[in-house]
Length: 374
Image (cartoon, rainbow, N blue to C red; front, side):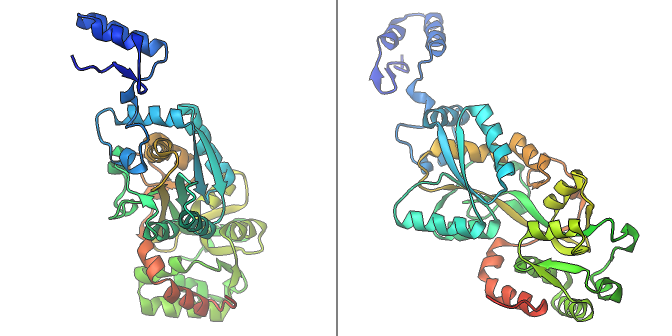
């Protein structure tokens, strides 16, 4: 027989020798059960000893999940660099830890800081991060630094097309959907603008706000309604009614709640929905097509805990992980999860365009909305 049990974790075992000595298949099956009960793990429970991220990422055998879970449990932990809010990554991490017994250690910061730290550590050959979970354009930047590993996950087939990149080194797990939000005490639903041109009406003077760095949203709008119309409509709005420019989407959304900015043009739908469900006087709507940008996850090419990293990647893409994302009011990219925004028409922003044409759209954004400074 093939000496399947002859070596346990690289060491000869008297028990394993007893298995190989058994003549009958029934006896061998019985002994295999004994090994499982006493907690002995055989070599086949890992991709291989000292596996690299590429080894784990490219393994597609029928026992893939068994091997990855066993390896992750042995590693015991993983580090995630994320720009998700602490409470949001906390819920994802807690569910993962409960399911697999593998501890998630998050380091939370802004997406630009995540890029900077990831690149600096890689250049110093300090392999600290296992998983990077952040905005699409920043993940694309990290991909271009050759720091991410493509994963052959069975859950990729469940995702919408815009979530899949040709290189496969990061994948969209959720959509950042730019919507318009309003204070329900100051703006009546029946008075909401139906077109961008409606916002040039003098009744909106001093009431409109926007986030100061949403140039990728602007690129999506220009692609959706055309260059000439977009230039004219936003120039007309600013000339007629001004524009309150604020830094940070969370701040802008909170200012809608307070009434300081009665109507905001670039709010993330999940934050408006979270506050609405908490009883805040805010609701959201869409003028034309909603502009959407995939944000997502990538596994570090030199992850110190490769099994745990790939397991977390799979978990976030799985129906279970995607449902958690939906419960946090994000828009999951899995076709198996239904959300209200699945029925909203969307225009997707390409992360590559957001990087390659960044200076163009940043300059135009600042010009149209009279934004000063760097």
